[in-house]
Amino acid sequence: MKESFHYKDGRLYCEDVTADEIVATHGTPLYVYSRQSIEQRYRELDDAFSSVDRLIAYSVKANGNLSILRVLARIGAGADIVSGGELHRARLAGIPADRTVFSGVGKTVTELAAGLEAGIYSFNVESEGELWQLSQLATTMGVRAPIAIRVNPDITTPTPHHYTRTGHKETKFGIPMADAPRLYRLAGTLDGLEVKGIDVHIGSQILEVEPYMLALQKVLELSEQLRAEGHRLEYLDLGGGFGVSYEGEASTPARVFAEALLPELRRSGLRLVLEPGRYILAPSGILLTRVITVKESDAKSFIITDAGMNDLLRPSHYASYHHIAGARLHPERDRMHADVVGPICETGDFLALDRDLERVLDGELLAVGTAGAYGFAMASNYNARPRPGEVLVDGDTFMLIRKRETYDDLVRGELELLD
Ligand code: LLP
Image (cartoon, rainbow, N blue to C red; front, top):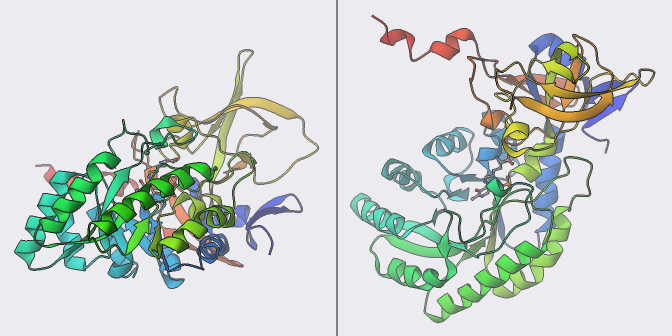
């Protein structure tokens, strides 16, 4: 099968449609996703773990567009949610509640109640307070709350930025391993709770297998201890975090993670829950942006684009790398060295720094790669900029799955407050 994003005769295609054609209809900045890629990457992950009973709960935070959730729901994905809003999205998209896990370090009582109301598969509980609140709520509502406790395995995870490491004990996430048995005992005695599993999530954009192995060993030891104490465990949630290639570096296929983890998992007899986001979506999307102008001086050159940090925050927030190239290739041109920057009034507003690329001219179209995850999801209206549109390509057709915001959208919710 050909790559979902590829060049043919010097033109960038998503599946069978050119970037030029999509932009002619829907303008820039614009997120463009490949349905083929989303389905392929979900299936690759699902197939890799197919020898155990499993729930692949797509992490909605990576990209919560309803059409994308629907594509995933149709091929059997569940959802990993972290807010009432994500629950709302997952339900609207038709992801069954009993295939939904509710993660997050701070869930409000309203959000917990919504999860109970919907009848979700499990709550990943992250504090003693949450156990008490959930118990009280479930009792009042006359239901039982299925739970796992998210443990913190105290592992330093090699992720490109420390903001996306969550497995070491200094983070706000999870319960220290040493406290876990006590909290499971407490959960076993509280009304309205049903202990079902153990949860761990060590970070995001992880390309090594070892941290997962370490985390798995720790949670399996805990599972044995808990079983010996009489808890009936049904599943193990190993979270998300599987990394992708941003700079052309070697990435680790799902199969490699699976081969390492499966022997121990099978022995445990526990159901496996995974919460992948980036692995499925990041390589399945690009951001198309138009060059407003190229500004060159002795000191530095800047390619100023119509997409900024409000559209794609990752380069600015995590110093992350995204490949950038023209939607048309011009091998006859010389190369240039420049920062690719947005129109926002901050020096921190950039898509790429010190980049060597084929010379680009005012008005040309650029594609920012590997932008399907944590791209639109983290977009904002900073500088009163409408958020971009989103398009889903399917073979030789494409459809708008989110309209570009308008100026009216920007002030909705404020206008009616005026006298
Ligand atoms: N489960 C939990 C509990 C999580 O906190 C996350 C991500 C995931 C699953 C999904 O992780 P993934 O498979 O996508 O790596 N905005 C950052 C990434 C933040 C990830 C937060 N939690 C970025 O753009 O790199």
